Length: 207
Image 1 (cartoon, rainbow, N blue to C red):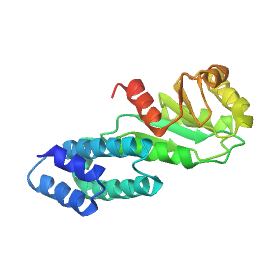
Image 2 (cartoon, rainbow, N blue to C red):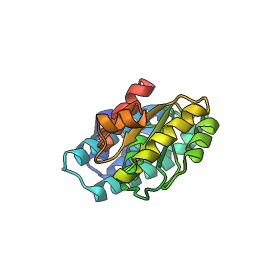
Image 3 (tube, rainbow, N blue to C red):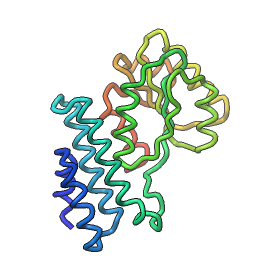
């Protein structure tokens, strides 16, 4: 199996080529999880190109669709192999903030890289974050924020999670967040780009 060819086709957004290669590799007896890995490598490259300005949101959305179609082909072959997920991540935009573009981009990249993402949506109260961490046991929580007026909501949410006796790693993300905001909120990491989010997940899950 020429994994590089599949990863490259994914990165170049060549939908027909991706589908054809996935089917070809399956017919040749390649391990489904190896095919998924090649697709994920392509998605990581898509994320890098988006970060550097070579790709825009439209390309990112297209990559997500190509990945979804490829996974639909693979799904029947993956059933006997476990989920293949690297781990579960809970993500939401904090209470008082309804912006979700950045959050959705990060989610798309994380899913493409093999993580199971629980998306809580926007304007999420701290109680909902606590409930999701309890239910999923997720070792990483992402909190998105765009409005500076919602910094207090970040802090309150982190405190509520800790008060519930839960201690997942917390990454806060947004255009203006920095080391100072991270310290104020009591978070473990901060991310200003989607690529930062991927790197944090890789560090937390050792993937």
